[in-house]
Image 1 (cartoon, each protein chain N blue to C red):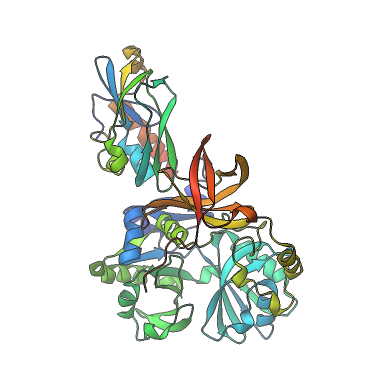
Image 2: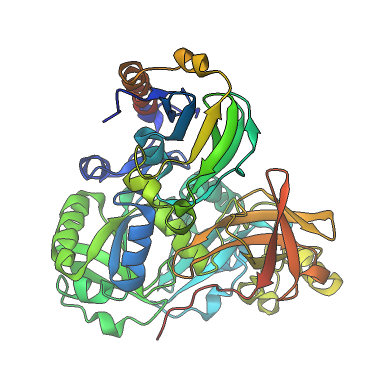
Length: 369
Length: 132
């Protein structure tokens, strides 16, 4: 494998701790990140049944302030940020002029004049430049990634582990809401969000507190079965939960409608970047549709493999792999809308052979409530 | 770690030869690089395989890896227990998780493969490359 020398990769504040824990590391978007510690399957199971702790400090943060902040967020993203209340967050898309994804992101409304965007690591600088280039609202835009570390604690016992470290009532933070608070003596933003399909929290704080928070949460969580988890499990968890990953399901060529994300594309809010194209696409119809599939035998349809319908290549797999909780192999793919109905039989081209698969409803996994 | 009576390939397969028959598997290094193994696709008994040819795949959560035959010959047995418990490949790659047995066309072919000491030197070099 040809990878840039590790020395050139960016490192989170917890890098040496990951090494000490024996993590297998991987280059993810230019960052040297933990892929796995004890193994992807055991980490996946821990998050589904107990709790897992992820260092996601590679994620980027962009802050937008000033009286034009909302106007700018409204202009560059497709969801309706005007509907957010203070302390609320939503999933959205940062749009190109053509209504495709510059990135996907979480938008947090900190105050009427202050928004925090959480974006993908590898897109952070491009996102920042894109937002600045469309800032005709005199908002203040800050590329703030270096000021934040981020931990995600996910799983049915995440709340219990975290609650011991803060006076803030975590029960008072509803899903997709957040609150400022102190955690283990560190000022934090605690958001009830995640990328795993489980209950959990994503915590934003000054990198100087990274080691303390990481170690204390691991120690306190250990009796409850919390373990450190890497990007490998993060990927199998989000895939089971049917969530998109930038560079796979969505990129600069895909629109929210194609990706099944019509619910975050609020055309009714008025014009925004790319909205003309999206209005046109909504009335003309899409030419490809993201679907979920499951393999009908033991083989795995992986990223980039062709999807065959009636002997013809009809699309490509965007993500594929085992769904450890379902004991099946699953994936997502783009297919023509006429072939996108649930129950449609498709074939995945695997190294020159074809393997049977079936289009199924997403999410593949839904947590018991 | 690496049995001294096995021979090894640069693609991280091992072979243990007894007379004209050989048992083939993947090395501990290979299973560690792959991570959790979830599936192994093996050839049919009777298949004729050439040295260096891919005769199957081992799939982990993250990746799929071709298995290249260290020698030429005919498949005489496959380890069907791996269908039920492919994770054995992570636990016991040099033992119970052998993949196939083969009747060797030319037992002399094995002499071109690495012995345990050479293989250990080889993977130490690979590990260095990874962390460079």
